[in-house]
Length: 438
Ligand code: B12
Image (cartoon, rainbow, N blue to C red):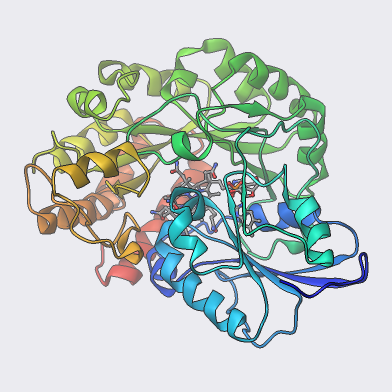
């Protein structure tokens, strides 16, 4: 750190989107392997004299012998130990390592021990200045974003640094954060429940800049500000692309939202239904999900020609062994086109983690097991962890079986031309990964 450099000479920055071997195994069953925006976006925020190389571990391994001036790594909790190992290898060669992303924000002291510099929270306020300061050797070991940055003037992510072949035409975000504070969700901690919005015109320009037809808006909850969303839909409608995003069930209660979303090319909404038990929703402070209204809301979304991808979590304290069949019965009756099943995972830093820890129910602190798909890391209330894991696998198997696909897609044939091939692809992918045939 004491070395001083001449400012504004050329520097090389290696940015890594980390993915551990374990998480790659988990994600093999996902047919769609979405681009990650963070590093192409941070690259766009770097001063011009920094040449950026991006390695996305979902696509290619990291070459730890590369000659660079600095390494920056972004990672989720399940990749933490793997990243600390990578960091050690670069630091042994005298290359400074900067860590950031969700796990660093949730566990800053742990991450600090493995890095020269950490970024806690959002980076917009300090990242460009930090890179300039690095050149003079005058920089801090920790940068924290106490005030959530405005997104008024942010650049577009650098497209040439996207590496995955993910069957979409482009990924971007319009808003960041979510107003809700659900116990299991890390976003309430990471973004402090502060929602920020990019100017509609800037988002529309980025949306239009992708050559492909299918766009993912990686917003945490596009229904946070429905008036903003409607203005955005009007602005992107002329480009005649197809898009998908994440939203709460409240999106489905607003007919005007659905109508303008559909007109602008919305083909699917990821809706965090989480559970079909109202008691479970209340238990984790997501009581605004009114379970008795699910079927009606899904029907309304379908009526606008929009498919539903349901986010479902198993393992809440109210869940018994019956939850798997009851949930599947519901999804089939409602004609839900796609679903992402998760095992409840108490990510460190969340209220859920604190509660389970106080109750002595955290089974392991091996973060690589915090993947939500392969391991149960806490003691469930009404079943064994083996039953929870088996029930989760059963749900995937049943949802992507021929019988269920037929039932669901015949009941609501919205977007059959693409939902049927996608369902069949998942049926094959799960079969290959788990060694069963549907
Ligand atoms: C897109 C996305 C994905 C994509 C791509 C992720 C990838 N790495 O390939 C897919 C679908 C593959 C995915 C997978 C998973 N995801 Co994900 N994902 C997201 C999502 C919706 C958006 C991320 C994003 O692009 N944000 C926009 C960018 C610009 O913001 P950012 O990443 O927060 O970065 C900012 C700061 O954090 C900081 N920063 C970040 N990294 C770095 C690094 C450096 C060096 C610096 C200086 C700064 C910095 O700078 C940025 C600007 O301020 C987030 C929610 C969210 N809003 O973050 C969840 C989220 C990150 N995912 C989450 C989870 C749980 C998962 C999975 C475990 C799910 C699963 N069971 O499979 C996996 C793990 C994958 C992995 N590789 O480890 C959790 C994180 C939990 C955790 N503790 O890590 C989140 C927060 C969702 C949630 N509601 O809780 N995910």
